[in-house]
Length: 243
Image 1 (cartoon, one colour):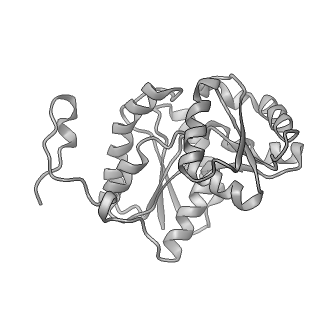
Image 2 (spheres, rainbow, N blue to C red):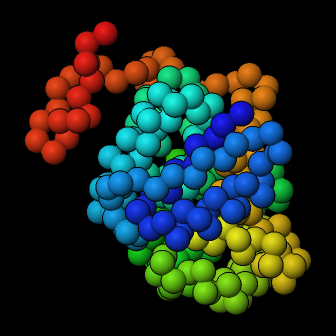
C-alpha cells in the first residue's frame, strides 16, 4: 500500500517532520510518500495562504493518481483543497488532518480542545469542527501564538496550553492543530495524562484502514471527476481535457 502524504506548504523541513510521524503511524507494509509542492506559501497561517496552497495540493494529488498512490493525507490543519482533491482522486481516500484528528478525538473522549498556532486560525478550526459534525464536541480552541515554522520549538508551550484546556469543563482530549506539532503527541500525552491526538498519524491510520477494508472515496455526484473545462492564465495547466 502506498499513501501519499502532502504537506500543503513548501517548507521541506516541515515535510520531514510530517514524514517521520506518518511513518511511525503506518503499518510495516505501508509506503509513505511525503511530498512538498513546488508552488505555494512557505507556511499556511490564514485564508489567503490556504487558498494559494490549493493548486500545489491538487498537482500532487493528480501526480499521485498517475503514480499509483492508494490514498492521500492532506497534512495541514485547515484541510486545504480537500473537496477538490477528492474530485481528482478517482475513488481513492483523501483525508485531512483536522478531520482525522477530530474524528479520533471524538472516539477517544466526549469533548475535546484544539491547541493550534496563531489565534487568527482559530476561526477556521471552529468552522471545520462544525462542518465535520463536531460543533458540540469541540469545547475550546487555544492558540500558542507561535508561527507555524517555529512551532517545533514550542512543545513546552503546547503542553502548558493542553493542561490549561483540560481544566475547562467538558475537555477530555486534545487535538494538535498543526502538522508541525505532529512529533509532540507522545510527549504532551505523558505530561497531561489525557489523549493527545496528532492529526497526521490519525489521518494515515484512517486512510490505511479504508484501503484495507476496501472502502474508497466517493467518485460520483459531488465528488465525480471535474467537468472538462479550459482554464486560462497561470491556471492553464489545470485544464480538464475531454475524455
